[in-house]
Length: 322
Ligand code: ATP
Image (cartoon, rainbow, N blue to C red; front, side, top):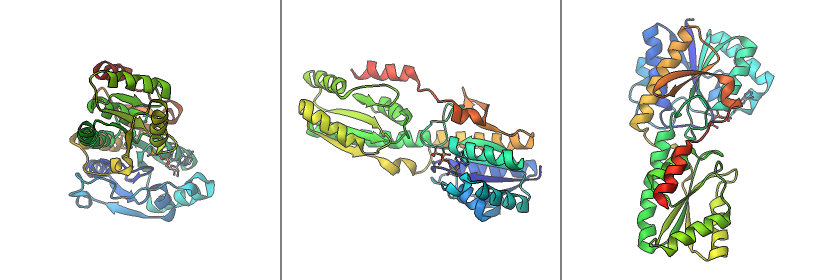
């Protein structure tokens, strides 16, 4: 293998740039040519492929987002779209691809690889941490710290006004961001899809808290299919027990910003591992980190298997906040 390509796809995540930088430098150390593909699979279809070298990735380690751009490409879901992408890969002489993204990106890459034989290695890059085969995804730690800073700020105003707050965080139907930011921020309650809690239960927990010494509380809510669901929950709580509250939806600010040290280190480690895996002839795996070590997971597991929340953390939050 002499030429490889790299792309970022799906939602952007802080640390993607640190991963691109690591992959480019590792490729150069291995004597491989590396090409950046712009806007994920959409750019692959349009032939937006350009060579990268050590200099093209200087001073990007601290930048959020992705210098390559990202997109969701409905066209890539069609065999016609992928045929054009394959033609572009052939023209550029690219034999291996590093795909930074989530399970959708890995699924698309697997279909492509089956159709044209290109080698593929996935790197988990998403703030949601919802990818099987790695303890953490690139971008998760930064998003959690962003949510935590917001929770801390809201606690100041909640305390001053003796108020109940609902803070809605991202997570794409999972509670990873909500759980870690909720534990770290001392949230009084947590609403996450993995642990069922009715509005009645929530109300009785809150009533118990307010009957004690508490005069303010923060409920961290993981966004659902319908971002903004916290407004409905807050209204239901008001209707049932009369607690006045405020809602804060963090939204896309959790996607941006300079990656944390933890995300940069993870991104560096996985970027190097991806290049080394391709150079060693591996294909069809995601490189992740489990118990601090690089782990190789068959790509199909990432969309076939669900990643479980850390149950101990759920129990720990209950113990600390009741
Ligand atoms: P995130 O977790 O941030 O949403 P993701 O990688 O899961 O990231 P998706 O939007 O699910 O994001 O997938 C990215 C792209 O991968 C899609 O826009 C599509 O082009 C391609 N893709 C996903 N699934 C398939 C599939 N089954 N066949 C072909 N292409 C696919």
